[in-house]
Length: 151
Ligand code: DQA
Image 1 (cartoon, rainbow, N blue to C red):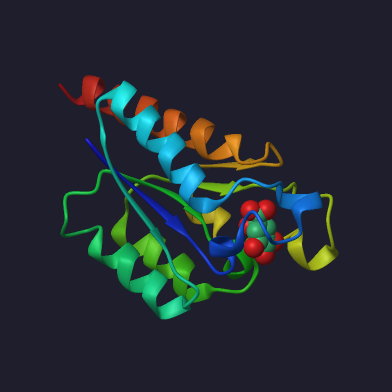
Image 2 (cartoon, rainbow, N blue to C red):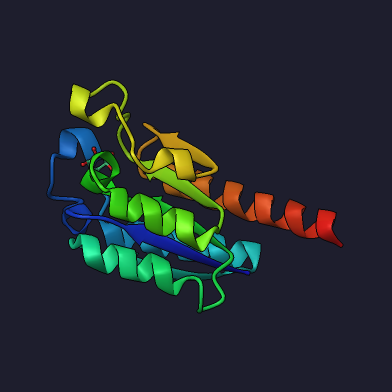
């Protein structure tokens, strides 16, 4: 099983950026935590980050051709604006779980709405960087159940 983890703009600055909201963990630390979880679960993981909307759309589209089974995505600010990222997720028709480190529902009004969530199977918000792990485990569990049911 292969899981793609996609990170949007400014998440490369985690650890330095608004630490009172996002904490001090860096993106490489999140990646290495997830690598351990992937190893434990016996699944392959591709991890990516881009500040550019087009690059995110390209990476999601590639998932259709590289054997990806499911996507964990933190679209960051594009969550609230990007019809292009939403359409890419919808187009590949792979199960995706959206993650937000902060609770977007208790922050500024413009963060309360997610354009991308309706094309995801679920959303993990407000649980800090641990949310990536819960999303990853939930996605693998879901894919395993689907696989068992289709046998
Ligand atoms: C975020 C929340 C977004 O509103 C924000 O633009 C981010 C990070 C989060 O993980 O909490 O960049 O996606």
